[in-house]
Length: 146
Length: 108
Image 1: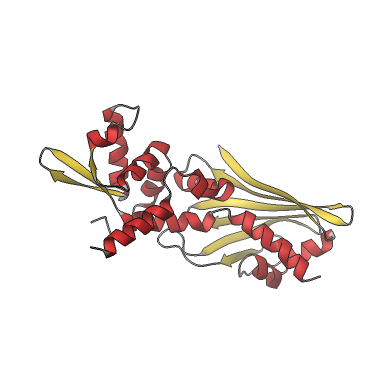
Image 2: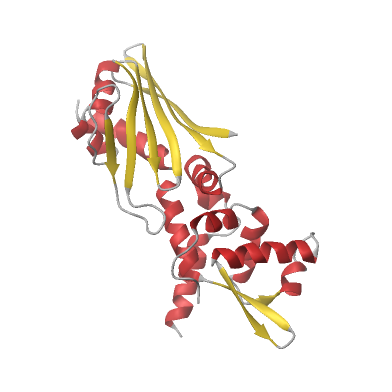
């Protein structure tokens, strides 16, 4: 069983501008992450972010699987325990763009992917019975008191 | 001490279950023995023992003998690592797509 994070939004800019923002490497770095993206079918590239050791070395490995300017873009998204894909679908709406974004393929039978999906889609801190953040701070404080 | 190299799938499996999250929550206050944990849940003691075994294997919880009982204690370092990892994903795309919106506004 897999699940997807879906975000559908209206952007007051024509599809060509939105397309440039999601396919230009320098633009992608500004709003998403440093990357080696090229708008070429089959191109293998990476996103680079801060590592979160020991679970994630900070590198997301991707491959362009669909590209149809300025309407559809898809690539695989593999990093740490996550083996997934993302798709962008752009449709002109009035003077702007309807963007339908999906990050899909989370395998909910895999605990690593399930927990990441929960964090991504619903907000882990809201979802958790345990407020991990508070726990960690409390324990750090009590440890420093000896 | 927890193992120096965490067994990643075990950690994820441990925190994926709501009862085990509640056990972690309970142990944040103090170390406890199994009966003191089990009385907070509407499930059998063997079921709680099984959850504790999974938490022990994950390194999130350690145990020590105290007379006739085993006391269970939360391992803050291990919990902190997995918290950091999850925080990376917390509402990741909600934030990033808002950043895309801002980028488009600022680069008219």
